Image (cartoon, rainbow, N blue to C red; front, side, top):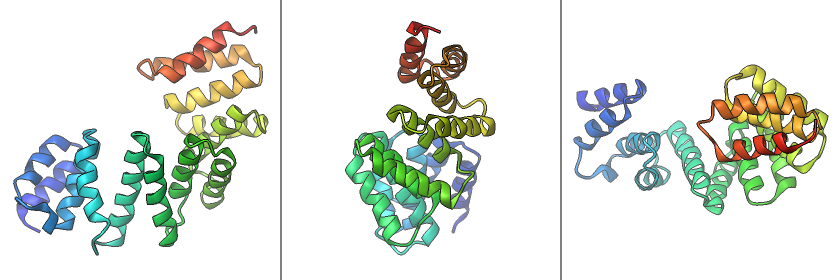
Length: 223
């Protein structure tokens, strides 16, 4: 590993992604011959929101014999990008590949639960999210996701409340987690609590459309 590559990794780890990307681009005219270079190029493009470029590099990584951790992380990022861009079948393929290879982690099951929910397969989503919490009871993402899904389905609302409260306790400023908690309050008919929580979620979200819709529903409801 030469000095320029080490410097690029340092820049990436210090969250200077654009600078890291420029350093990496100068290392080789053919990154495909270097899986580790492809890995960091994929990471940088992902952090910069350049998903098509990230896919180009990360899809090369998962077909190599690079170390297990890098391949695991690359598949997780691929599933994230495919989910973010609405390509749920491709996201599911990446997650299935991880599970088939024995990577049964809470993170994989939580991501799979979200993909299933977005694909309209609610029962599968709940099953995967429960599995994530079985593996890691403190997984905040799984707590929040399961609480939200249960509230949307009108199922086990008291459990949904416990889950969403725990998520907010762990990350009290996270707008998505506050939104889920506010939505559970709304579903339970606790309108004043829903309004207060959703107002805080909306304030920290930069005007997220889904949170704004939840806020409008709470404002239009009778206390």
